[in-house]
Image 1: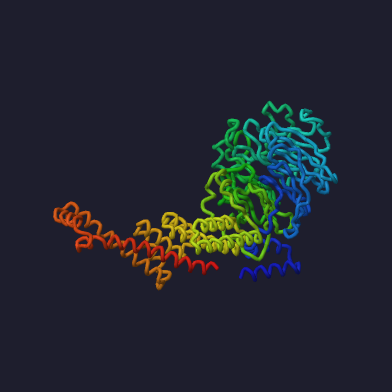
Image 2: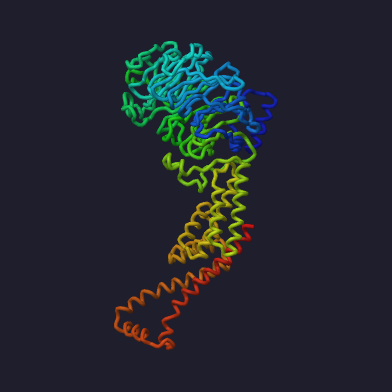
Length: 632
């Protein structure tokens, strides 16, 4: 049904019957279900903190913790390649990089953690020309070019100042030169906190929204701002109005202690084509406001503030970084952002319903940058690579995979330590082939009785298979590989009578495939060896329900019944120790000759245990031979 509907939409678009078909294509569930990772761009050696397309969508610029910018030629994911990489002169992490408009993509402006704002002229054939534009007392996190003016841009600094730069001003000659030669402070929020992000309104190009370390999102008119060069008075331009969630207004508006952790400030801002403001709030959801017709106005610190929320977008976490952006896709049909769990989220703009959740980073997604015209999405975060998502034949992997665990609730440092790569389909296939080679080597070692080597091979196979799959096809193959490795490791531990380790391996396999009969069988063996008879019986009952006629399960059931009978006899034995008659009988049995009938009555229960242990080892070996055949 969905595919036929998409076919009709594409046919109308091909015939040019209406102009709404492009929007309808993106609204089709059949299309979104095929939106997945296509390729990775790798050259940086640190977190990629910023991405920006040129106006035509033919080049992508990226900035990283390695203090370099990379220019990528990737107008389509099949031909993506590195065009050039340049050192910028920054000494700390680059937070924002953009092509200078109308420069033929030959000039790039950057800002960084070292507080400097720089211009890199890549028009030179050999060494790019670098120019220091300005320096702030703290880091500069974001800048935006003024609409209609390719030489002017605004920066948002952690020192609380918004500065206006003009590329036409003469360059600074030294680090200690006149800091106001090219930069002019136009907004001062230093008494409140650092400025985090800003965005211009396309409906009113002189209006820009500013995020700070408090719940208010203030808007200013660039034509009415006044300079505050002293940078010490705390006085600056007054905002036209502000936007905030009503429940947050009393939680942190006004001055804060310098150095304290950021409260509910905006980490990302974006305007729609119709002037609606979308704000990505730290520690909270994403909200959409009507910036053209604000309502529910209230006075907050002398600033008229709109508290009417058009839509809230929930489901992702934004706690660990200040750099998470937000954007609108396909003529404002979708709102997109990243989360601390490493996923990219898409919501329907009007309804707020989540349309897509797909893995975008091994740890945290910060940047989500749509192509100006194509269904292509560039994503980056803590990983040192850039992911390009587009349409394809394979469905994306299930984001709720059991093997992913609860990494989304871990702290940032723990998630970085347990980071797992996100691979494209061809890369994932190669890793699974490597895992298969190690697994087969483990089977060979186990068959020859080299248990330690077998465990090492299975562990190498699991390490090779430890990645985030990009498609449902690769995900299914990965799960099958992991389950076979865990179960084969359990078989080795059972052969070594290491029942605790065998149980752990079986539990790992059953988390991926809860209804795996072999996993239930081997966990039942391990629990029998640990004398956990009740749990052993539960696993055995579940396995028999899946394979009622299996002979190995029937033999294990007989062993379990024998162990239960043996346990039932123990209370009567201990009870007899405290009775006179039983005590006499016990003394007679202890003093009887080795070959007497009295002594023989004391031995069967101990012999049963030894026979059960031997049988357990035999069962494990037989089953492992079957497992080797299955794996091959």
